[in-house]
Length: 139
Image (cartoon, rainbow, N blue to C red):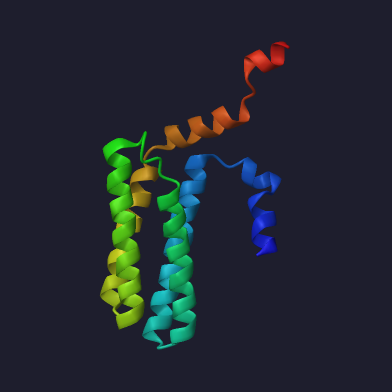
C-alpha cells in the first residue's frame, strides 16, 4: 500500500495529463481482466479473484472520478456503464462466466478507443497543466 501511495504522489505522475491518466486506468483494468480470463480458463480461482478485484477497484475509481453535477448526461451514462461493468464482473467471478468478463472487456476497450481518438484534448490538458499562469509570473 505504501508503494502505491508513493507512486501516486511521485513527481512523474504529476507530469501526466488527466487524459493520459484516464487511458492508463483503462489499460490497467484491461490488463487485469485479460490476466483474470487466463486464470479463469486455467481454473486458478484465487488468482482470478484477485485480478477481478483489482479491475473492480479501477472501475470504481473511474466512476468516482466522474463529475455528475457538471458532466450532465454523459457523466450519468458513463456511471451507468461503470455500474454495469462492476455488476458483470461480480457475476463473472461468481459464476466463472468468461462471457460476462469478455463483455466488460468489450465495453472498456470501446471507451478507451473513444478517449484515445481525441489526442488534441489529451495534449491540451497536458499543456495546460504544465504551463504556469501568466498572472503568477508577473508578480
